[in-house]
Image 1 (cartoon, rainbow over the protein chains, first blue to last red):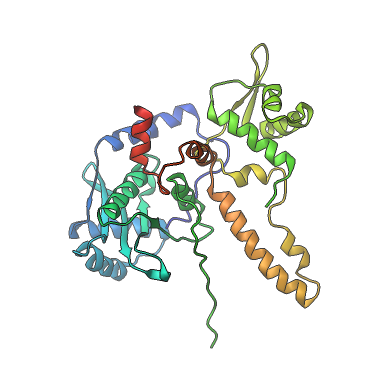
Image 2: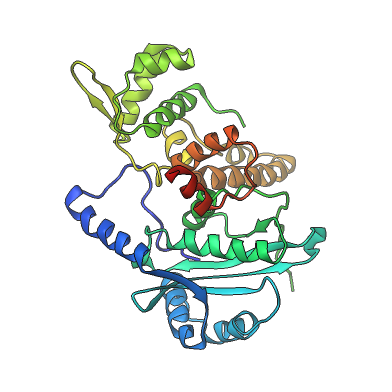
Length: 177
Length: 152
């Protein structure tokens, strides 16, 4: 999840002149955007996006995630990528979890990211909408996610999609010794 | 949590401005709608103008208009201009053991408050207000359904 790419808060800072090109690029991107299940050949791009955003390359982690979700036939398990102009520009991963924390089956989105230079074009919204559609097909009617409280960029994104604080409170403690 | 009056006035005003960004709205119009003191509201609007969030428009048909980005401006950005959010815990930290323990709990609440306010943009607030009218919507709104409804 991106932290270092925090969105500028407050008043708009772009001038009209330099705003034109990103808007035009965003419109082009929207038109040719495809959301589809991940393929093995997408993995390098997914690893690169995650490394660009988090600053840590986690090659082994992503390989195991691909094995678990990319090759999964379990209903509700989804590893989606967003492709624009032949390039992977974002991804989202989720699964249906049954009775976790005592809750009836629901969809969990545990990763979503869009390449920084491809943001503000609705790609994250399309990824989330597609993953939610997959959850509906799997028979669940609620979707959850969890992220760091200081990750304001992604928190704002989920809020903008209609998500509100849920009825669970995450707790943690340091283990001594 | 209760917000101070200046914060509320700022949020009421920005709600009106962002709902119709091209329109110039006078302080008197907002004051009348929310039944608040125009004098008090003028001070709040002056602060928002200083911050570049609204722009003052002079002359006939003048007033204020929205100059910010509703998809980026958060409730925290607005409220923190008028009041300290979550400063209560720090005041207790150096007193008795009970105070220190309470400070831990209160700072936990402050962090949650801050995270919530930092994640709700003005655009999200407008959408929440829309949702109240449309009470039958599912808990998680589908962006595609929304767009389709707007287009229709």
